[in-house]
Length: 198
Image (cartoon, rainbow, N blue to C red; front, top):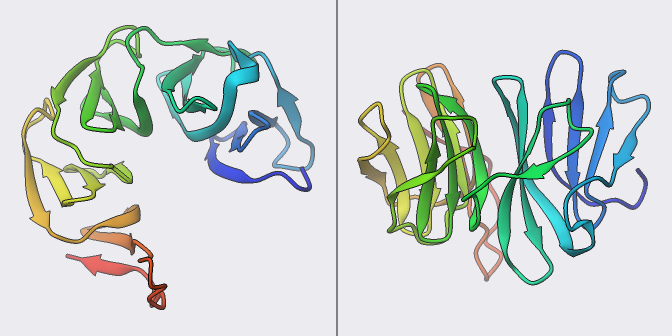
């Protein structure tokens, strides 16, 4: 995998999938000692990079962006060997694993929600501005976008409240703490490490 730009990594007990820029998805079943490239993504020639990958309910889900700028959600039922587009998943690119039986995926100006493993999607939120990260904790899902960090306060993830004006390029959670990676500004403000929001 030398010379390959890695965009995202997803691992289970037996499978590691790596999403890349221009080279699609690589798969390892022996702890990363050997990697195999899978080119069975539909319309492979237009896929520019794999934005994110997650695993839920015997499926892997991947968000792919084409060279024309469009984004779609892909799904694999065989451990990442083959992939198919999910119906209605266009425009979604930042994935989140299951939360209360739902799969959430954020895209420009909308949040997609699926309760049937990606077969259908609806869009309870259509005000997002440039989402950068979305995660699930034991209690709530959190989402970062250009206008701040938000938390869903209902189990259906239809209603979101603004927690802070902070924006970030990444989110992580540990116990009751939410960590976020501050967005690097154009004037290259020095990075001082993750911020903690308790």
